[in-house]
Image (cartoon, rainbow, N blue to C red; front, side, top):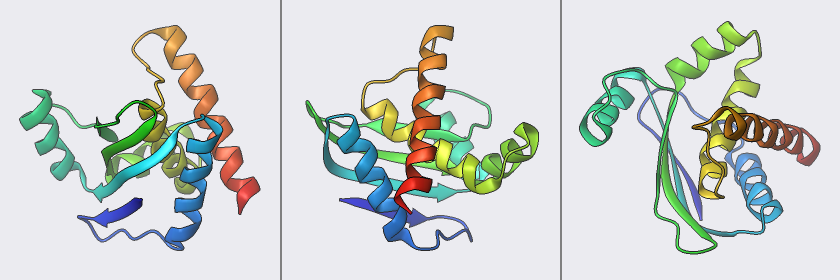
Length: 139
């Protein structure tokens, strides 16, 4: 089950479109859907999580906590809408595409993709871009 939660004024329109899209990413990666919670928040909310749980004192666009068991994906994905807006501006992309990138990024981590090394980051970007295209095809 994929759920969307809001700790800010932002709301996804047509949540079911996003749910089907995330489910398709999971299927494409030969994984199984478990309980995945997306929490949309602001910078301060995510900074607090970053400080409390990861001992990091900086803003970020996404933090994901992975509770997956084997191929069944479970976890909590926190996304700062403030960061998504700023990143969209900085990268000269639409807010919607940047939001899709970050949403896909979280679930791709659960599928086993990492982004610590340059090589891992390149593969992660490729998978994010494939996922964004999948959203536009599915809808």
